[in-house]
Image (cartoon, rainbow, N blue to C red; front, side):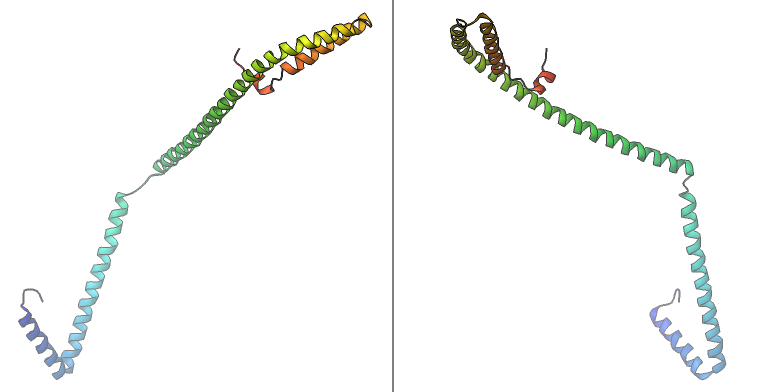
Length: 169
């Protein structure tokens, strides 16, 4: 009860209980009254609950064009992320290949410098052997000297195909 103290509320409840016990007609009317009051309370509560979601949904309406815009933005973001990842992968593989190229060039330089110093000493010994074979016939001399030159050329030029394609000229 609104505006009554606890003492007054307790006294009122006791009086109602006493009247309900004394009179069947009062009890019947009291039950109808409380049932009507509770039904009214329930209907008001339902109406309030129905009105609240309607108001909130009406303020949050999303148009189809807004949805399409959002989908387009999301799709473009995914595509850019995909391209960025692909670019990063290609850059990493490019760096790795450049490092391998650098190592192979260093190996080539080391091999050519070591083979050029050893080929100069081996070419002098092969020329003395070719001059000793020239006494038998002149045609044999030209073929043996040309074959010795080819063997020297093969030993000095061991270039891998990757260095030919990636060399800076």
